[in-house]
Image 1 (cartoon, rainbow, N blue to C red):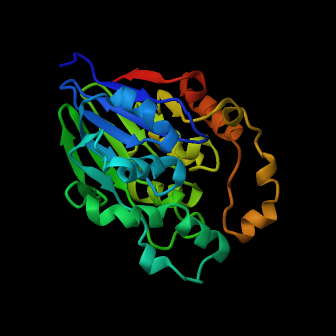
Image 2 (cartoon, rainbow, N blue to C red):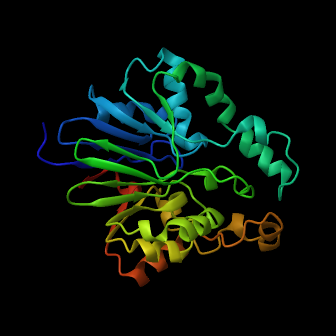
Length: 288
């Protein structure tokens, strides 16, 4: 038993990865994503031999779920005691081959990145798998998880990021909002549908803080603290980094309003946020 609820924001051991471990007062665990194969040893250090009451996979990108898949393929997750796996991924078979999308080549690349690897093992996860529905809530010890946003059909220009689960974890003292890798268009839908649900003390910055939801989403959240899954180069990237300089190409792909982390950091300054937890500084321990 613990006298505190602790959230570990685990530093990256692979590029872009996102990994969180929440330990409840009853010493149960909630894992969020976990990163890649090379990130698993560090994740195991923070999970230890604790019971994982919930493992949440936000969306099917390599830097978020390939570690989980690698552990299944290695030893059928034998190193983890998992009660329930929560996710809601885009329907691969329905989307494969669609041409009514802004950029078919990019769309296909998104579909093929890691989702087929997950689908290969999905049937063997039936004992623990739970496909989340929007509006669903889960109670784990002193924590309540509220799933606010799930995959929306038709958001195809930024397919996997805009399929990110958005959810809050509320303890008796704090509310933390996780935005996954949600982009501008997904952020629009989130704001339109659920802005009244977004207020939180702490927010995980969407898509590592760049190419992410608009300022109106963060204004609805009005956080006291921000969690950035960012290496130093990413946390300090310019407003328009080299890979975002071709604005016409982005418009043609319907990927407008995508800017570097500096823009988002300025928004947080405007909102008066004083506390920033950044993985470039190492693993952060946040008391909830």
